[in-house]
Image (cartoon, rainbow, N blue to C red; front, side, top):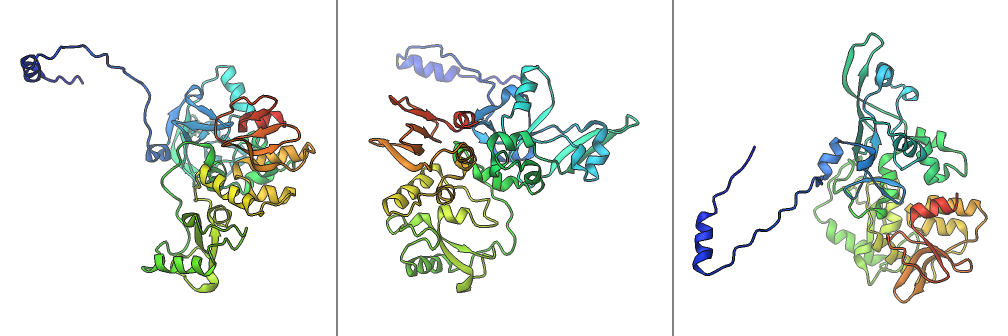
Length: 360
C-alpha cells in the first residue's frame, strides 16, 4: 500500500518566508525493532540474523534461544513427551550451529525468549499426514552447555544430567549482565504475588534493623540502599512473618531459589563487588570467588580452575577507572563483560567469548 501526503500548503508557507528547499535522503532500513512480547511468541530467523554476544545467542540486543519447530516424522513421539528423539534447542553459538552455518544448511529456526520450556512444534507422521502445531518440551543442546561450561557441564562431564533439570529462567538470569537489553516481563512465581499494602514501610524497617547489611555476604549498603532487598524465603510476598524475611543485597537475593527471574544490571553487580572488596569481604579461595563473581563468569572460571590457574582477583583496578571483572595480575590476564577490550600494553584482556576459547 502506498501512502501519499500533500505538503503543498507547507511549501507555500516556506516560500513566503524565503526558506531554501532541500531534498533530504530517506534511509530505508530492513532492521526490525522487536519487542519482548514478539520475541516471547517467537520470531523466524536464519543463522545470519543472529548476533554473537559473549558466545550467546542474541537478536536485536536481547538474549534468545533457538529451536526448529519442524520435528519431522518424530512429531508424535515428541508430542507424547519423548524428548530424546526431538530436535534440541540452542542457547549458545556452539560448534553444531557453526557447522550448519558453514555448510549453508537452511533450517526454519525460531528465536524466542520464552522461559517456560514449552515449544510450538509440528511435523509429518509416518503416513505423510501433517500434524498440527502443538506445545512440547525439548532438550537443550549439550554442545551448548559444554561450550559455556554451564554449571561445570564440561569440566564435570555433566551436560547430560544438567539437561534433565535445565531451567531457562535461571540460565537467562545467569547471563543477563552480558546483554544490553533484558526482558521486562518476569516469570510467574508460586504463591501470592501481591505485596502487603504497608510493604514499603516494613521493608525499610527490616533493612534498618539489619543496619543496612546483607545477612549473607555482609556487605554494608547504607550508602546504596536501593541495592539492599528483603527476601521472602517461601516466595509468598504476602507472608511477612519475621522468620520468613531475610535482608539480602541484590546479588545474594538473585541467588535464592525461585528468584531466577531477577535481573541485575552489570554495573550494579560491579558496584556490590567493589564495596565487598573495599570492606574486605571477598574471599581468596575458589568457592568464595565463584559465589561472589557475576554469574555469567562462573562457567569460564570453572574452566580456568580446571586448568590449575590460581584464584583470580575480582573487580581488579587495572588503571584509573579501568576495572576488570576478574584478573590474574601475576599472569597479566583479565576478563571483562563490558564489551570493551581496550588493549593495555603487556596485558591479555578477553571478552567472555574469547575467554571461553582461551581456557578451552
